[in-house]
Image 1 (spheres, rainbow, N blue to C red):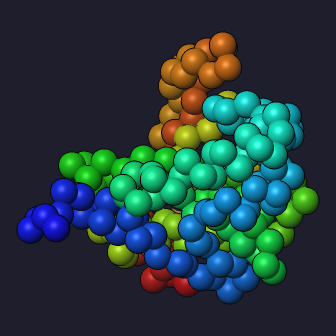
Image 2 (cartoon, rainbow, N blue to C red):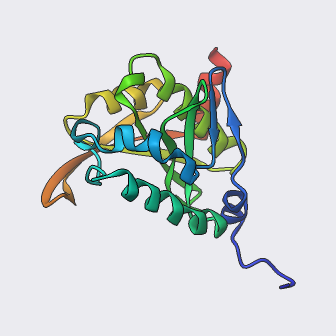
Length: 197
């Protein structure tokens, strides 16, 4: 057994990813048992239209993806939670990347269309933002969306984020250059919003 951990502080947290709760949701580690629930939305062209990945072709692809996450979780290199509502995994929410050096994280999320319009992903994203500031000690949290994805932009604003601008043709996604909007919230912004409630 090594005397010193080779994991960074952030990796140490996510190697034993904590369960988070909100009024209606449980945010918890994804497992292969979630394959059926995930495939329900991950196979959809509508869901993946504004995402960087293609629809899952079959449930075995989803199962293989979830199995591969075991190692990533163990190494503290995967920062995403499954979002559970009334016992069903309805999407994911978490950090797509974290820069410990810059004390900054980027959040991302995806929700099954069957559960849209109830504020569930806003609830999950706010909990992840709070975790980033309160538990990870981040200074800045950002989020990005492809131009045209107004639902995602609206969610970012509901989380207290402000639009910082657009990055023209900044990402090559599915063979096409896409313009990206970037939003952010600083710890002081979140604290001010919290104190105003």
